[in-house]
Length: 174
Image (cartoon, rainbow, N blue to C red; front, side, top):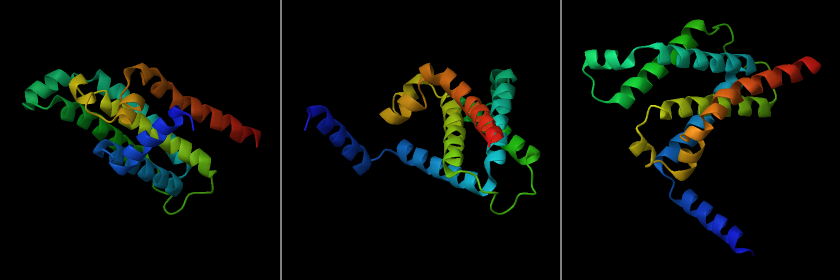
């Protein structure tokens, strides 16, 4: 067997035998997102992705530094990330439809999985943007390279909306 494959197997075995808390949290959030997507459906997932963009726009327009100083809070990450997540939750609960309780109409499982991965990944990426650089260095390599990498910021901004457009066009062809 080539040495590269052995190296990949050893690395994967090491990660799976001793996962870090950020990886465990990441997988838990992805699972929650997937089951949320199954229970609410593709339309609600699309709406929550849009709410994420709106929460990002509002958060970046707020004078967070002045509000943080006035409140006397010291933890910048928790304040900024908390404001962002709070805005997202307010939008999701206040603008979300309440009529679709129970299982959503059947959608392709791969579409739900893709949308839930993009939704949760987008939220995680945006939340990690508030972390100081010295804290990002402490994350597991997978988390750091996929979700906290500033080089992928444009990808995380474009991918969810691009997939929504693509899925919409595929739906119209059916």
